Length: 212
Image (cartoon, rainbow, N blue to C red; front, side, top):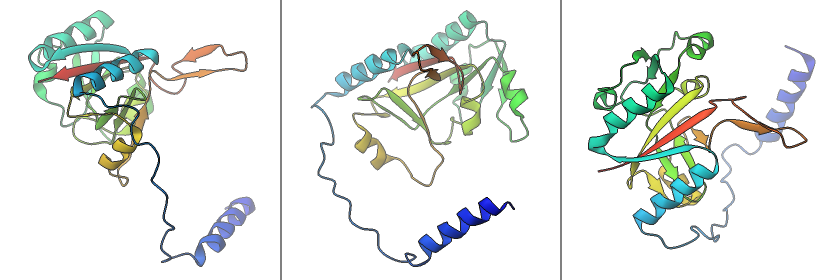
């Protein structure tokens, strides 16, 4: 172990040694929890607007139309291999022609990079920020399957998975679970504000809002 690492760890241990078992100080929660009074339909509209503002491609359908819509999206993309995590409803991909690739612990980054697309559900979506959150639950897979493939399609059930604000989202999420917060395709900008997409994750994010 390097001396620098030892030094850092020693300082962390020293800083936390005397605080073990000490109650955490109260945090004021008197901030505005939501910016507006919306119906579920209005929240879904706001989510769609903010997702699009982040350059995500937004689609809407009902449960009956979801398999056909997904088949069209992946066929239009030319998807030949589709990564599907455990727990994803089989009916979602019933009409998709691509070869299914399971999410396995043995998959390497190179394996995942060779996959054309990934399809997941989500834990919830935040209307005011246009953010979708995955927590590795059923149908969501491990974090890396939504970071390496270049095309991610995420299904959001409306209205049950849509909340208005971040405080509302935090109340519904389990802090002990691994979470991935996604606001649009992966993007970064240099000092001249030239935007580059796909550096740290998928270049294309498609979000399907499903009712019923």
